Image 1 (cartoon, rainbow, N blue to C red):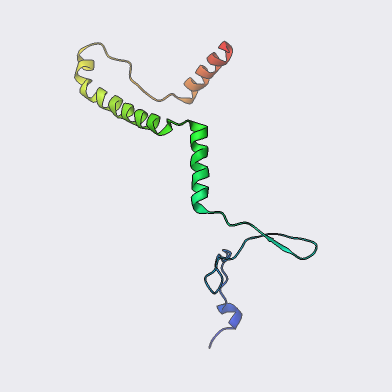
Image 2: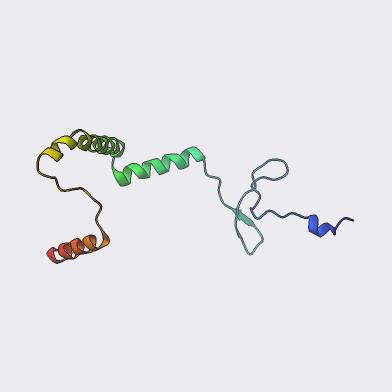
Length: 117
């Protein structure tokens, strides 16, 4: 025996982006008191990428990508250097081990810097 038709009805929680003909559905922004519908203007994806890239260059500087490449290479070089020099560290004086700061050390450093400012 089949259940009632309302149990078979499946509803999507996401709003539809295209109508039955495959055309994009405009996004309604407002309805005026006269009953006119005001829709959100469609944004060109190419123009949107252009404005976002322009904003990246304005906020981070023109040489942002070159600076990023430089930091990645210096990180790789610094990671390679201790591996080659491990034998010299063991033979000579023990170098201070590099470690991450604990929250207590970070708080102590912050207090010292705040008093200096």
